[in-house]
Image 1 (spheres, rainbow, N blue to C red):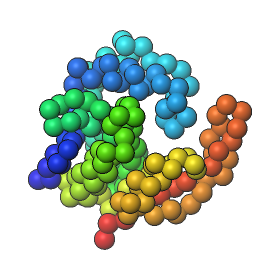
Image 2: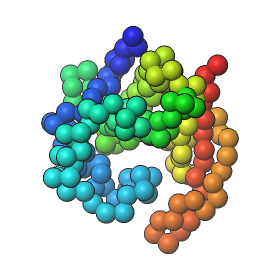
Image 3: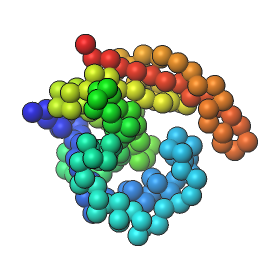
Length: 174
């Protein structure tokens, strides 16, 4: 079994205590651009989401994990989405909640742990990530962990009157 704990963080299931983190991230307009969200979420809706977060990835085709410090402080989220067990692939997304936890190796360790879990436990062959052109931190992170640029979706995201390119990165495990 793959451990979901590293040297500085661990990945864990969502808990009811994570409501404030979910509320903060899901209602942050700067995150909407990458998540496709166009309206805020209420605490009631997010509570319903938390009540169903235990559902199996094979059923709901996604898995959201909390990135937490070793003493259980929630500092971000890591998602597997569009889970496709037949073709053995899934998309991956990551968000760290505040600047103080960025550029400290949190994202690197979280993504390393997730990759091991995806390939060894879920038996996936590939992960992919959609990253906005110009998001230098995400580009650096995914390239550092062996994701390769495989395509550009031109004028893919429209936000604040501007079209932006989205880059498709892929990591294949052999």
